[in-house]
Length: 134
Figure 1 (cartoon, rainbow, N blue to C red):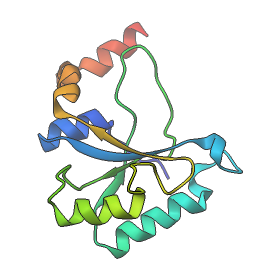
Figure 2 (cartoon, helix red, strand yellow; figure 1 turned 120 degrees about the vertical axis):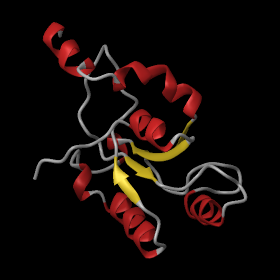
Figure 3 (spheres, one colour; figure 1 turned 180 degrees about the vertical axis):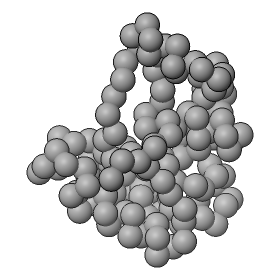
Figure 4 (cartoon, rainbow, N blue to C red; figure 1 turned 90 degrees about the horizontal axis):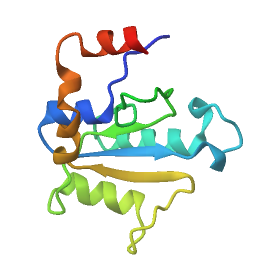
């Protein structure tokens, strides 16, 4: 079923705060179909069990290239080392040295300052006009 998936930088601007998301390296999995990756589903199950909101998201938007959805997940937890949900999430995903516990998974942080560089993407008609020139 078709879905409308927001770019992660758009989510960041809507939240008006830094955001966290997960990316998945398809080469680390036995099939290129992200929907069948057990590791990804295990993470989603853990997020659900711990009542942590999450939605599919796209990469940071680019005016110069289009990319398909590759299983990325926005995790609706603030990047705040004193936040109980962040602490829980961080302990679940990362070893004490900061490396990810799950092969092929990257735990990402996008600062609002970086996302604001694409603020012009939010102007009405921006993407329609760009696609006419593409």
